[in-house]
Length: 101
Image (cartoon, rainbow, N blue to C red; front, side, top):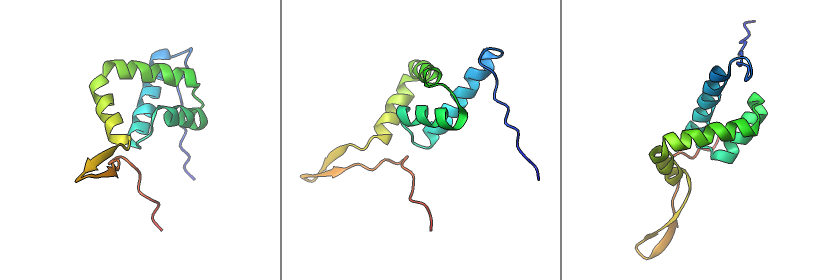
């Protein structure tokens, strides 16, 4: 049986490659509609990346792409809005669908 061997670069041996890999994983989390805390937790659990590293890369991405993150946060955070006198909760377009049964 074919087995994938996903080699993760070492932070101390190849810091640039490591940071790029963390950035790539953060971008994948964003595609899944995760917030910062969910992303930190997912990378710590699934990729054994220390939360401090994820938070540092996240902060740098935020500085470089402030406009993108503002739109992203607006899209994923459900905010109520007023529709013809009624308050309606906004549904995120990034929210995952329920599992298909």
